[in-house]
Amino acid sequence: MSGAPVRRGGPPLPSTLRELSRPGRRASGFATLDVPEAGVPGDLAREGRPGLPEVAERDIVRHFTRLSQMNYGVDTGFYPLGSCTMKYNPKVAEATAALPGFARLHPHQPEDTVQGALELLWTLERSLCEVTGMHRATLQPPAGAAGELTGLLIMRGYHTKNGNPRSKIVIPDSAHGTNPASVTMAGYVPVHAPSDARGLVDLGQLEKLLDEEVAGLMLTNPNTLGLFEEEIEGIAEAVHRVGGLLYFDGANLNAILGRVRPGDMGYDIVHMNVHKTFATPHGGGGPGAGPVAVVERLEPFLPAPVVAHDEATGRFRWDRDRPDAIGRVHGFHGNFGILVRAFAYVLAHGHDGLREVGERAVLNANYLATLVRDAYPLAFPGRPMHEFVSTARPLKAHGVRAMDVAKRMIDLGFHPSTVYFPLIVEEAMMVEPTETESKETLDAFAEALLRVAREAAQDPELLHDAPTTTPVRRLDEARAARDLRVRW
Ligand SMILES: *Cc1c(COP(=O)(O)O)cnc(C)c1O
Image (cartoon, rainbow, N blue to C red; front, side, top):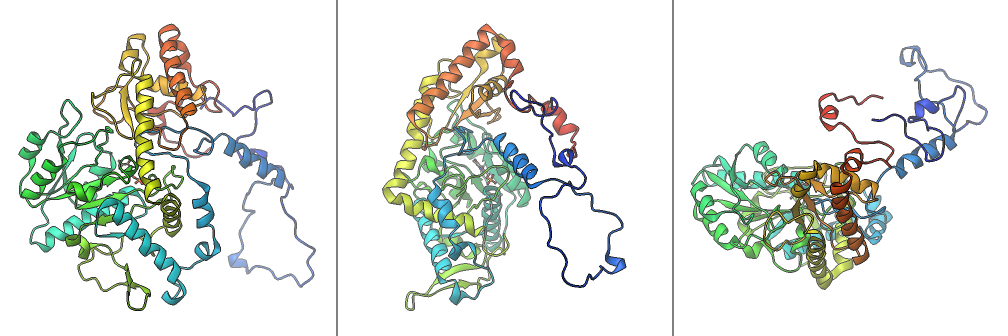
């Protein structure tokens, strides 16, 4: 931290409401008392004043508005954070979720009074099964990682029912960090499958890792390097041959939306991040929703309750009579408001619109990769899908690293890409432009990245100092983690 935030052209601003506090200043007043005063019983009263900041309404509004202006989000600008799918989120989804008929429901209301909400959940479940090629889904998990854990517990339930829960889950070395964490939480041992020179799972090596102790393989497709696993059918066959299940991490499903379905590739379980693929602003840890869809033979193990639809009467109800269910994974029925947004997004796009989402996501990533690849070569030779991984390795000759590029991009007005992930790529820069951006934005971002590459050769110090235009300069990240101080 390099001292107090500075207003451009003005005096330093106080950083906290406490610094703004002046004795006696108030944001609200009470009318004169016109009833007898009743004291708080002595044993319940505080000994001293609570010590809250004393500020005017004006101070509060300016303080929080100023803080909000230091922030960056998808409504402020381009946000090409690889593996995060930070797309612009259409406001129709927000408006729908805010409708009082959705926003003011109580999860304990009798079923008869929430038929519309149940129908929404039912229809959303059908839509998600349609785009994934699966049989049924649970909408309970509140995040992608929670979906992973749910999917793995379903695997455990299935294998246990067959007599042996098994002990290992195979994941590729390029996997998202939540994958091995979820595997461990589900009580399995993660086993790493190596990527080959193309950045794809090496089928020959994979087969050597497979035996009757393997409960399943977690593999996203396109994989975490943004590359399509061409041998997916062979991989599925090899996993099924040893009785294992195939798990699809569909956090970034927009790469294949409306084009191919995990179910048709041989997958048994899919989780989706509707807060990435189906438009909910995310970041900072939530809220989200990570529905999990499964093939027919895994349906009994889905968390209970699930929505049931009676064709004869047209009524919807909660089906709680599910003896093999793995149990609840979230209070009530998941993050309902996020599911409403996802439903609005699906309806607003329709079949053709969702397909176009996938096509444009891939087109934008390939266009951008082509503009910048001379300065930032692709880490792998294949054609990327919805995101690409390039490397800042050539800049190392000037003493410049991917982190310097990222920080300099902030000065140039852009949110940087993901850096240093996936771990298997040196000086990795993982860029996911998403389908929602215009050609002008992609051109401007590419121009900025190329400018930074030129600056690296001419004036590397400029990059080491960056960012210089932000309220907070470059942080010492190692110290921030090791010497954590969360009090001002
Ligand atoms: C974001 C992401 C996750 C985790 O999702 P959360 O909602 O953050 O828990 C898992 N896998 C991949 C590939 C992701 O991009």
